[in-house]
Length: 284
Image (cartoon, rainbow, N blue to C red):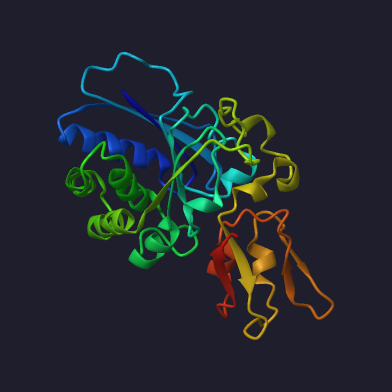
């Protein structure tokens, strides 16, 4: 049995990725099981999804605590979430990142793979510029590096079960498969952000939803951050007015300044800015 755990944020398509993977596996004549875990999250909140693949009926119904493969749709999660917790020694970590696999580490050893799924999604217009949907690009990369399901079956699943822009998603999956980079790594003692313990499940925000964003740490949800072009900015203050997190202040000249501690990268400011003076760029 192959067990895969997806880590992403609301709006990136982690849950749909696990479901599409299961459908592709069915088309290949295998057995699959797919299910998500999330609370009352908003766009940008951490989301976990699971998929099991086998040639025989699957009787397990538990969360996947010791996956063979971990797929990370948002590299920002590596900063503060133990996404590789429980990953089996010799397992695979696939990260959405423009960096080479060598930029990351696995203390327990295994295989590292990276693919710039955000760039692919933006280029193929899958999702929006402020919230690219990276799931199909990640699945294309996953098919190529694991061989657990065929790329043809993935494209068939996309056509059958993705109601919006299926051709663009098929192209994104192909791009992901063609551009993924993979490197085996030996066990290392080099510090790595993820913990070696099993990853805790995301805590639903319901009981604490009234707390301010700096206490909830919603800035850690950010995958894109706003950058202001002062030459285009008219100081209309629309960004401040429409920001749901009070993430804007003003400098001595009256130009808006982003308070990144509060900003979760929702992109509302860029959408509402009349002179298009705000661009959303990938979080470093």
